[in-house]
Length: 513
Ligand code: XMP
Image 1 (tube, protein in one colour):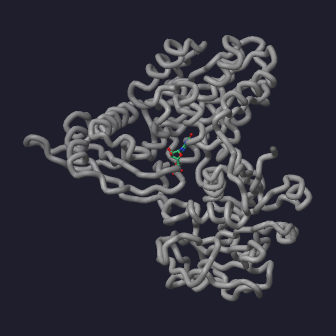
Image 2 (cartoon, protein in one colour):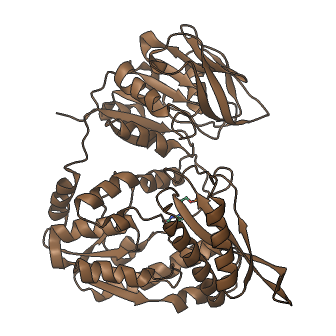
Image 3 (cartoon, protein in one colour):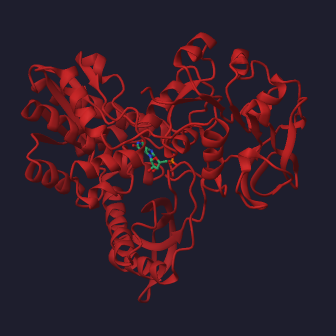
């Protein structure tokens, strides 16, 4: 039986991939495509419903992102979110007003009548708003289903035609009952079964790798994260010794990480692994660089160089296995022609496959992070590894704002080890999505014993999140903070002050650079 398919048309929102995730969580297969996808392609994909994402644009700006109007003639349910709602409203003859003031943050949604989309939900609940423009007049045939204090058309719809528009973002975790809204849309409105299964994914992936690779040889870069680990395990299961893993130790890893990767893969799984100690080269490339994007690019460049040198030693390799996830695929779609703004250049092996003449093997290409973790468990990856907190490719370098040198890396590594140990001992390592230290480029005056000190400051970042797209700093227990602070100041030479980062994402990002 063919998969039921839902299309998300990306109008440039930072949250688009979360929409796809929410749809997948309802066990409905879902693909994200740029909003520019022509109607013939959309028809060929035979979607059962369409979701229009939010976007940073205004329908009034020049060349505002839009979708092929044929979408609205397919006769299938359409859910427009934020900017998507405005497009929907305009398409059917409604009116959108531009607003100079952005409404941003929580709002209280109050239901005003029956709505299949809000079926079974409370009369009032919290939603997350992030918009400038809004729908001022509904198209004919639509009716209001909920309002907020500042937004009289927070939910509108034409149930007979399966058309709905939301001014808020049901896909972010800050909106209560977001999952139920998607469930209502997919099951109730679009009548989908929701029977897409992950269980056989690993076997299917192994079979696909065998088919693609034949009797060829594969190179895979290990980073220490769960994505590359699961990729390596899948490829190893498919082709055994014809896999060679390369781990580039960039000298910017957390304490004990390099050893642990070697132990897990070479010793435990007996996967052929070459570790390349390249810390010096990375530091040289970083010397004198203070601008975040310049640092990220330098690290990416050296990574490609080192990886390339090692890969050439593995003769006869025809393939490069990469732990590309769905969000990366979507991001790069956005980067090449879509409307999403680039916030940070992500560290990846861009350009490598062409340089080396290698074909890509990307078994995780259609999965999200938590789905990858599920596959990791199926493959017997230890839980401690499966649930690792994400760690950025450019490593500690993006946690040292400004210039990076060996000494600063060493200081940060020690401070970070304290944060990790204390959060772990407090039993909170599953509560926080990420917990780490940042070495600040400032010095401040202190007093130790009877002497004046003038030393560095460390910021502690403890954040709660479910996807890394939005995050909150939570309220860390006072005891935990006290222990972290006193241990860092007492044990880490060169640090005399610890501060707590209390910024949520957005508007801050998780990493400082
Ligand atoms: P930001 O700082 O953008 O980070 O809020 C969101 C999530 O992504 C991680 N991150 C990276 N991961 N390569 C990665 O693989 C990178 O270059 C990179 N930069 C940030 C970050 O730790 C957080 O989980």
